[in-house]
Length: 136
Image (cartoon, rainbow, N blue to C red; front, side, top):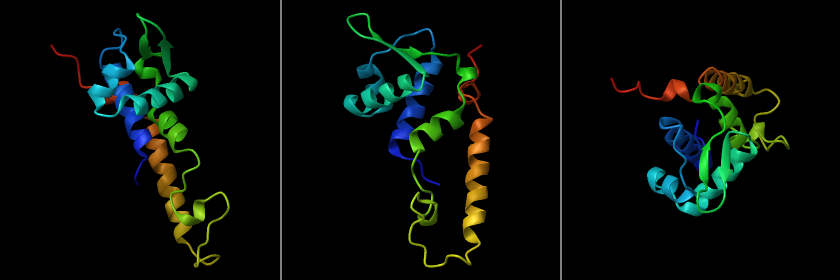
């Protein structure tokens, strides 16, 4: 399964913020840290803020920080938000796609189960679960 680039960047931004949750960062600093253009990171930040995962401030003292503790942010929520509307395979498209194997195909069910297992694992994982242990 391949995630969209925006999903990857969103997860990286959240990880950078979770590594030091007391520190507010600018979009520019986050862009440099995750190696993505600032404009792209800015769009990701807006989406994460709209989802209630980040708080943002404008102006000289502005920046971005997590809106919740890393232990309260589930990876499944993030992935679902950014992957919404993306079909894993042709027959998962909203319009049904153009599968030449339908209606006899049993692959669809197997792929659906695999997708659900993938998302269930992400639902069971928090941002805090992905952080290295604190230095002793």
